Picture 1 (cartoon, rainbow, N blue to C red):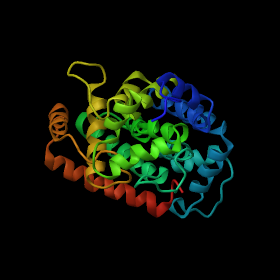
Picture 2 (cartoon, one colour):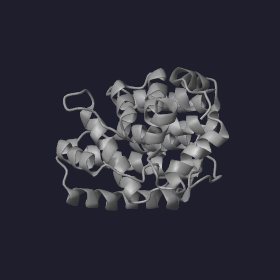
Picture 3 (cartoon, rainbow, N blue to C red):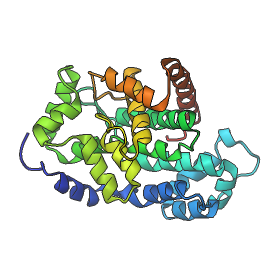
Picture 4 (tube, one colour):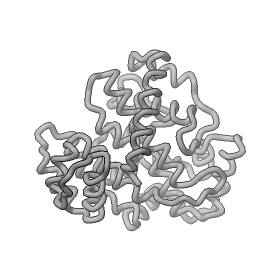
Length: 291
């Protein structure tokens, strides 16, 4: 690849000045609310109001057949009441992040749309895994899953087209995993780039760290081990089961088993989780939440 955009710092700066950064304020605001036990419906409403296109999408969902009602609503406050606080977190994050993934052109088995489908699946499955293994809310895990491959979006936008296509071709041919070829050519990979982007956006350390190691994991005893384990498992299972774009033809089964052990999850548990994921994806497709 050319030497024009090899600096991790430069890539982060380019993202800051691009359309990718358009999601920063709203998504960061929602994540902050998710992680604040004292947050309220009013807090979430105020964040959503900052983004008129998102307000329009939320109103469309609130007036859809899924939330069928005789009365049409036209105010975001009413939409919040109809949809519910937790579900609105889910929908608002998905709708907003979708903005930077919305492109269907396919190159070497990759498209932003396929990457989006993968990211949604990883977010939902990560949420399922963390809630079942720890009993904690998985809303921030969903955010981490949605954004775990944002580094690929940055590469898609800022690497020379021939360079990006060359890397995709290596994966499409089954020669190497994308993060391995990135390390060789760039000196970093999309996971570390994603971590740098989210750190620059002031995301919680636990989430950005998990994104940064979703292909190689972190050592026992490090902060955020539980979140990182859940994200690795979700990414692994979604790639193995063909949810959207796969950047890893070679999956690390040993690390997968290690993460299962870390979270106290059995292979039988994962089968149940995958069934639940399929049901959730079916709901999204049926009700066109992110369309």
